[in-house]
Image (cartoon, rainbow, N blue to C red; front, top):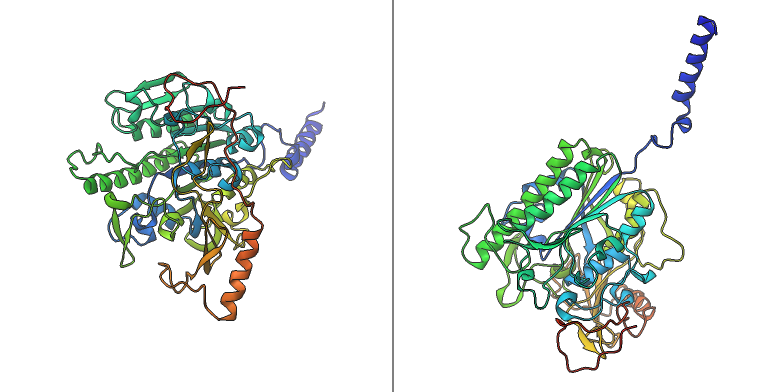
Length: 484
């Protein structure tokens, strides 16, 4: 080919590549799928986050996420650990997936979160289908790794470093912080001389380092700040429960900062969507912790259906993707996470998979100012019980709360609305408006009653198969069914 013809040919090819990105190799898409880093702290209410008005403590790294991203005011978790975890993993409300109460699978010795059931499909499995590398670190509690050592892999995670929960008969397994007992693909062991939060965080950073060229979905259900309360490496002289709790909150903030710095160091910060939230409110009761929020003393409300128990801090940040400095009243709850992750990754939830959530991806990306949710719900307090070898909720129809941007109702186990609150005027739920004669209040009750009427009269039990008894099973005065 003559030189001038070669130059013309190269010019044309160059122009085509410039004007038509579709001809680029599939291995080098014009727009990469974003990474997702989901951080969920254990037992921490808004009153302990300074960007949500805490006057008791400063959380600068979490506050930086809020300042540079989007802060939600109306995001619901569930009131207890298990319910929040299974809900965000499956996109289903507890009344549907059966985890309406809290229980520790490794300690109770019955059932498990069964990956063979389509109803238990996790966001991790769906993200893997879209080409994501997946990793989880922190607290699991809904499988016994002695029964299935690779439960995490079967739920869709490529790598993990998980505290499974206290395993009956294994004393070392009680520890999640100081010299923690952690399960990885290599098995379970005690990490002598280590602080658990460092092990979990370092696992995620190592995974990000190895997979930074791939889209990643990272799940960090932090064990902090759940009991037992311990002194941290940064505050080794913390003595009483309150000092230790404060030290643990500071360590949460430190871990958030460490992860964000790692994203910067790896050069993937601007394509990583970071979500920060908590699974329920702060520990309450006789050993509870109280903080000052916006001038109001707020006792811990874990396990309660008050706003302090279920309206979680919820912050989303990604420079260039998530608008900065936004505070939104958009409604969302943990059932929205699965469809949101899938949409952010460019996919769709399978049509034959039943979920309750609605994606908020367009809100996160600044394409819409509000979510599609007209109401959100929280359910799942208290402990479960064993009936005929199965773990079930403590009640046939569990008490729950439903709210929109202004009003909130409480629904009893008799499936009746018992309380109505105007959260804009009464955020601490002091004045029950159930008997109000105002037309607006009556209309609101009718609206929520229609939602209540649409719910089943009986909450589901977990989707798992009965299994053979093991030596470490908790002995109960019930007859266990034969394993299939």
